[in-house]
Length: 176
Image (cartoon, rainbow, N blue to C red; front, side):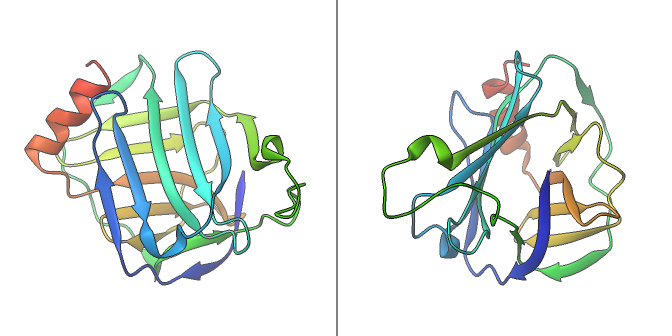
């Protein structure tokens, strides 16, 4: 899991759409270096990648690479959640065996077998780690919400305020 240690005020964020990847969130003011990647999923049809700034641990990217086959479809709109702070979470990367001065690209990746639940609503896509607790609060960066549980671990990612065309793009890329 990704443990939150602080918050980085995100000035420039965006969602990106690709014909093959359902949805990408980028925070441009934390993306000035090659990121570390925390990877979660069930190892066969779910994959999510979270890019972290290698020195600060600030989230710079969230890639919903493969959403799996069991997606809950909802006619609801995204509901409001208690926001702890504005910005992207700064996660603890102190335990990563990565050295910027030597070539050890394999150390840039940390994989965890953590299946997740996916809900696609009228104007949102929500990804929640199955074994994580419920989100007690959220960090907001633009249209992206990062939910944290009682242990202050990131347990949920909500892509919000999606337009009908953006929902169509997600559906097409996820082959729904």
